[in-house]
Image 1 (cartoon, rainbow, N blue to C red):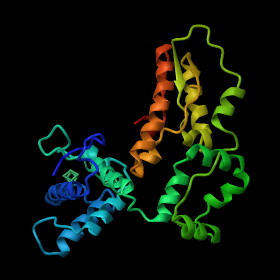
Image 2 (image 1 turned 30 degrees about the vertical axis):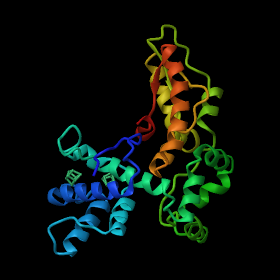
Image 3 (image 1 turned 90 degrees about the vertical axis):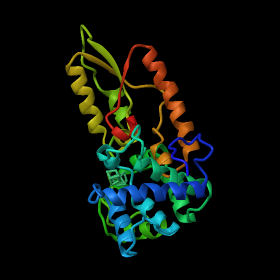
Image 4 (image 1 turned 60 degrees about the vertical axis):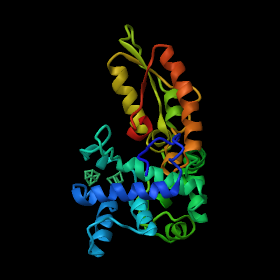
Amino acid sequence: MTTTYDPSDPKYYEESDLREELGRVFELCHGCRMCFNYCDSFPMLFNFVDSKDQQHADLTPSEQDAVVDACFGCKICYVKCPYIPPHEWALDFPRLMLRAQAVRTTQHQREIRSRVTDQVLARTDMVGTVNQALSAVVNPIVSRPNTGIRRAMEKVAGVSSQRLLPSYGKVRFSRWFKDRLPRFIASPRASVSIFPTCFIEYMAPQIGADVTTVYESQDIVCSLPEGVKCCGAPWLHQGNVAEFTRQARANVERLDEVVQQGRDIIVSQPTCAY
Ligand code: SF4
Ligand code: SF4
């Protein structure tokens, strides 16, 4: 059993090693139970153990997988857990769930529908470009749950018809930024570059506009970094570490140029900043 959260560790993708590590961590969580009300993962884990009337978190592989699937990566449990590294127990629950997803992805264990859906939805710049351009048609579909078309989407792509999905902006944030009349700043205090993120670029440009207005009102010059794309988090969340790394590396190279020019990077989406 190897406690590792590093995808470059040779043991990271070994399924038997992972299963033992899941057992170790589930045992610790079952004894602690502090995270019982954060999400579905923990109650499911505790119910599996309690229903067997046993002391140890001896889950079957499919029960382990169900706990992994119920985690949506919010990281609240990481923030609250007293046993995160460098504690001797080195418990990082969200990163262990990510390791489990990565093992499943590299071993092609996911069902074909979720593989196709993940491949499409992870291309957020492509999806965002199309859907924003067609926002007049797309918005009524995504913003109304439980309609016939949403139920069809659920059958085809597995996206819950009950889920409220964000709608798309009338104009992209980068378009708004370029078309606006920037505030004249006689004596700039600083210079920043706003990494727009897909959500702000395609869905919520008003947030980016507000960020720009606040910074400029404080005599801080705003610009946009050239050539950046989606942060790659959707690849990471599905356990595709290789694709995530490729995308993140390209962004970091672009953003590094900006930093070398003396500008700070502003990211208003926590996941994308992470
Ligand atoms: S993640 Fe940490 S705090 Fe949460 S139940 Fe497990 S051991 Fe307890
Ligand atoms: S990171 Fe996952 S397991 Fe932890 S609280 Fe969030 S959803 Fe639950």
